[in-house]
Length: 84
Image 1 (spheres, rainbow, N blue to C red):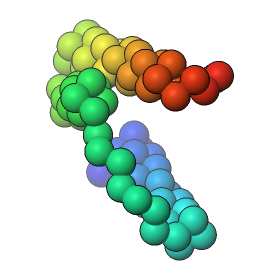
Image 2: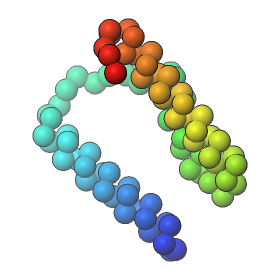
Image 3: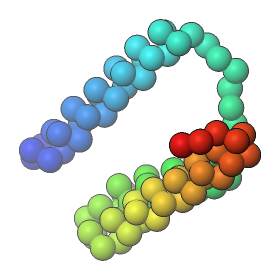
């Protein structure tokens, strides 16, 4: 395992710990369904990580996923009249 893989593994473990802590602090709230645009952006980010060996393809997929996620957030905020 090289250094970059070790950093990714540490980041995943840290995010998991933070998610567990937040779950217990906030308690169980009603589930919100993932929108189609949100699901597509998640898929593109994961595909970008999987195809990370080819930098152009990997970064392109991740960037597209992040842009779609931001568009989804803005779209949802306009529906609820929430200002970012």
